[in-house]
Amino acid sequence: AKLDGRATYRFFEPEMDARMQMRRQLELDMRQALARREFQLHYQPQLQLEGNRLIGCEALIRWQHPVRGMVSPLDFIPLAEEIGLIVPIGEWVMRQACRDAVTWPAPLSVAVNVSPAQFKSERLVEMVMSALSASGLPATRLEVEITEGVLLHESEKTLQTLHRLRELGVRVSMDDFGTGYSSLSYLRSFPFDKIKIDRSFVKDLSDKRDGEAIIRAIAGLGKSLGMTTVAEGVETPDQMERIRAEGCTDVQGYLISRPVPASEVLKFLSAERSTY
Ligand code: C2E
Ligand code: CA
Ligand code: CA
Ligand code: CA
Image (cartoon, rainbow, N blue to C red):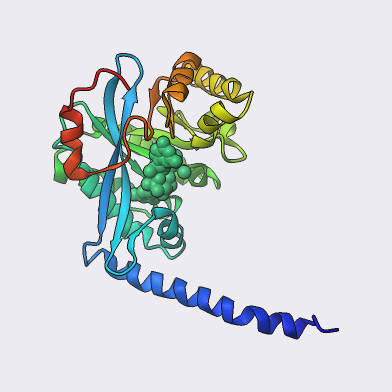
């Protein structure tokens, strides 16, 4: 046979090698990026539907690589989590986000994404307390966004960490709601402040007949549990109106604004806008 095991092996080897090498290079570059100040935070506003009021922004990391250009977090956060680099990177994000948010008019808040690997670190709560006190940002203006991954191994310790953050006054949001296998059971294990409805459900509003039913159900669930519900990835006025009709409390998406550099947040906030 011509397609024997060895032939297949020889065919894939160079490709695997190239992939491994790219990964190693990415890792090396990422290890230096913090010291070289190549990371930046961009901010995406969140709008409360009642009264069209801006309530805060989500911090989203950007990597301005000297050669590759702008690298998407989707291309380096997973590797950073895998090799533990997310702990120092996440600490930088938290400290920078608090420093930026304290310059915004109160009570605007900042939402920071916190990875599962950061919850394994013993010092998460201390790090957050230190970021708050160093910046002067009140804990009530900080929100942490976690995904199901954090609760996957639902350890006592993780829940304790979440409760300690909550006791400080920090709010906790469940990110990407509905995309995992057990979103519902996580709502039972921890009293989140906010549910972020994943963008894929918002997209279904235009594509699929039953899109509304899902959004309506999640909004209703949030309401009965006393949680606010923010729809992610809202891009069109039509989606926004349907989301409003289904009872979501907040929206976030390109329709309101793309994520903007920190220096543009205040400009965005002061711009007069009567409608979206
Ligand atoms: P996420 O937390 O779900 O963040 C929302 C993502 O959706 C962002 O992508 C945002 O730019 C994008 N987005 C917002 N509105 C729209 C819209 O209307 N349409 C479309 N198509 N996209 C929209 P981004 O900034 O590329 O971040 C991707 C993911 O990377 C984030 O997903 C989050 O999981 C992760 N990430 C970003 N920054 C951080 C960070 O500082 N720490 C950690 N641990 N993860 C981060
Ligand atoms: Ca998020
Ligand atoms: Ca999300
Ligand atoms: Ca996501």
